Image 1 (cartoon, rainbow, N blue to C red):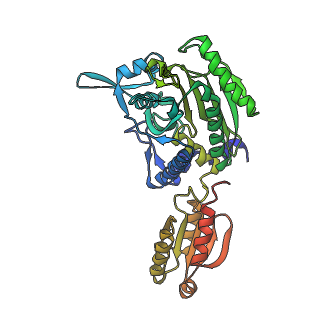
Image 2 (cartoon, rainbow, N blue to C red; image 1 turned 30 degrees about the vertical axis):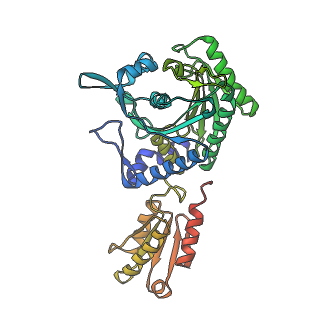
Image 3 (cartoon, rainbow, N blue to C red; image 1 turned 90 degrees about the horizontal axis):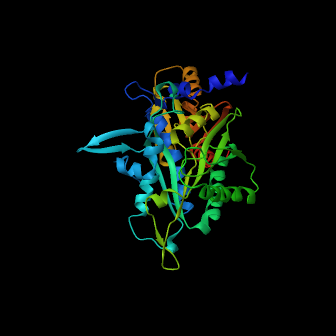
Length: 404
């Protein structure tokens, strides 16, 4: 099959509708509605992210969606980005809906006196942002106007830059390997529309390049594609069809802390301005979900599957036992459905296959009598009869295999 035909088969908008994951509605163009099954995937991705951040020494924060226009003028977003922003007026005061999370993290940093001993401070945020995209460019979850960035903002001393960037690169590698993604790296340098002096930019670019070279990571230079406040390392993941998607980014920012008068008291008892590292791994939770839907063609690993198993009782007499099994499996932390419709078994199996449900558990007289289940696996077919505890152990083991 050609890549074009395979890509069409995996189209996340088509699969998102068939698998009941999300909807796009005229009432809110570019702002997706997540359905219950889509929320399962989203929650699993966010929970996994939170566990990894905590383990890596990040503190989670949440900042407001709407803040005063003056803040965005101070940050530089007004001059460099306002045509992509949404605005509101409340109590005769102009507000902007945030297109990025960084100024909020800066305000939290500035909320108390900081010492050099506290640094690095690593703030992580699943922050909902809004950016105005042209209606013709909107595309399912890949190109939207409202999305959640898995952001982090690290406030560091200059002598900590390379070690912190090194740790961030390791964390990003850890994430992508869990999903089976390989990736390419680009170093994006000073754009024409930038803040700050060429000297500061050269220092920032050299710091990022130094880390890449010490880690012996292959990379390409992407001239002039840095953020307006600093150079960045971009990660382009490769999906199962070999297509490239830009997701993760690590940006080094010497500008914004100075604009907001961020300070910490150094070992010399004098105020110093920290350097800020902006970092995202998924990039956008929504966009990463779209990539995963297409990468797996909707056949998610068990830990991400909205429904991990569907129980199929053959007749009404088998329904009470089906619900007993469901309760037992759910108490073990598994996501289970019972298909108790009065339909032929062949139809129920075909529909479960079409819905890409990983496991089916068929119940007839023999299974009720033996307190067992007849197991079918998606694409593999019959696995034979198993008792309930064996089924729980198999699914839990499968669920814990995050690395594919």
